[in-house]
Length: 243
Image (tube, rainbow, N blue to C red; front, side):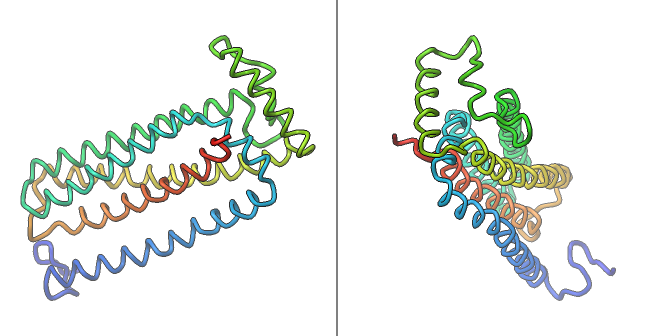
């Protein structure tokens, strides 16, 4: 395909090329909303039907890790926005710095998610034959306080009295938990790959006030992924936390 500098042959100007690319990215993000929408619908229906099990499942999650990860993603949105601003104003060095910071924050999020997933495997909270919502309360670790374990046992007793099939229904919660957070993490991995490409191009000085479309478009994608998490965090982590 013919290309003159950063302008591809089918476009007359860089502005036209940028507008077309931006429209394409928004169309893609709309399809992503539909993609996640199916999972959110499944979550809504099952939470309505099995509210007790979803509340118990939510309270097994580590609120501190989830809250910290939320702060990390909000910070990454800021650094990504600053990278876009720097590319638009010709601050080439700052573009690279902000992109690297965004990559570090995104990698931090994924690292914490691995820690959370490891906890679920350790506590037998992965859907399947070994799933046991009571495993942690019956097999506490040396670092667990007696008060917390006693409270967890009391909560489970009350939950089982309200829902005798709690163990089976809680698997629905964790199936959605792993499905939704896993899909989100996959999008984060894709975003990290795109950031690495942007960083390489930025180091070469490719992005200028006249041409910074890739930074803007990947910025839109990154913000979308962050917004999805802003919805996932309260839906998955904050059920019945007020009790």
